[in-house]
Image (cartoon, rainbow, N blue to C red; front, side):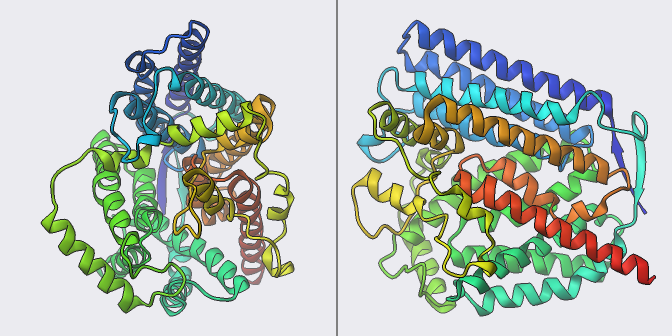
Amino acid sequence: MLAITVSNRKWQSAYWSAIILALAFVIFSAIMHVGVIQSNKLSALGPGIYFTGALIIFVMMVRSGGALAPISWYILGTGIFFGLGSALWALVPELHSRRALYVRPGDLLNVNLLNSSSILIVLLSAKIFLGNKISQVGQGARSQINLKSIYYMLIPVVILSVMADYYFFPAAEDLIVRSMQSKMRLIISMYLLISGMLWSQLRKQWKILSILVLFAIVFRGVLALSKAEMLTPVLCFLAGYWAINHSLKAVALPLLAAVVVFAFVLVPFVKQGRMNAGYDAASNSVIDRIDIISSGTKTKTRNSAPSVRPLSRLSHSPYQRYLINEYDETRPGESLSDFWVALVPRIFWSDKPVVTRFGRELHEQFNRVRNARSALAPTYSAEAYWNYGAVGVLIVSVLMGLQFGWLTKCWFYAVQGHGKAYLAIAFPAVFLAFNVEAWIAASYVGGFVTLLIIWLIVWLSSLVVGTRK
């Protein structure tokens, strides 16, 4: 049996701190905007303070039992991308390599107001579902969950899923098979999550298996030259570990290490690999990717001068500025015009348009190139404004807040020993909240519906198994 500690008092304290922090960010941004104060260094103060506060609040929430509460990870994600990323853009003139991405006086005024307003709306909307009490088992209570049987049942499915990922590398040609693979990866997330939660209780052979699975998934991410695929499984395991171990050292140190590794190791590594002449996202074999990686490593060794530019990956402010200007100059986006397409699973509509196509299109539009190998992430707040202005930001932020608030409530319900099927989507749900740079239709429409469908399937399966027993 597994004991998970939940403290309603600590959680509420952390949550109200987040609301106050977001409100202060809004007030600061509004004063700067109304006063047309164009100093970039002064503009960086707001997002810089928000980033620091968001890290502290995230640790507070984890220590209160909210290690897998989506709203906790939303605060962390906005702290990194809307806080640290924006502050760096303002403070480091040559953060980006291209001059077109450099910050100009006053550029951060609209960006800060957009992001801070959206953050506050999301947090207030989430509060509707969360209310003033998240624990029904008593303040500081320890609820018991038996996860070992689930852990053992997942093992064969996880092994098959990992083998399929390598067999179809880099991606299955059939879009339906590719879609099914993405759903299967949720099982891997659940396995790594439970491995982290059970780590102190697992026998040696099962710990070795968990490490091998984690290594296989991370190495597949290395071959895919995907930052998300490399970092996500590690965060998934850590989130499970944090659900049980709330000490400051256990939470803060791995969190800071993950941010540093992402910015200074994964970002330059992936960029180097994708710039290789032999790189092709669709056709490279495993051997091809190993050759690309090895040649990139040799080049990096010869040119190993330190640089702050890897941190530019955290800064979406130049692209937010661009999208804000596009709408203000009567060139609105159309990425949400067919958002409903994301609601239909591809298994029922094989010719469904690819809802993630806008990333490459935006990259080509922004950089004025053709046949781009990379895609741009707009951040949900900028995409909402680009499509429908302030009204779009309000509607999208409210909907996201309701989503995250409800999922957070489901997490606290699950750790009390009820609705354990939620664990199947626990980490994908927090990643959905953390990944604020995502496209709205793909993540907060299609992605959300996918999580609900998988949750329903797991819940029905558990009922069938329970009835048979």
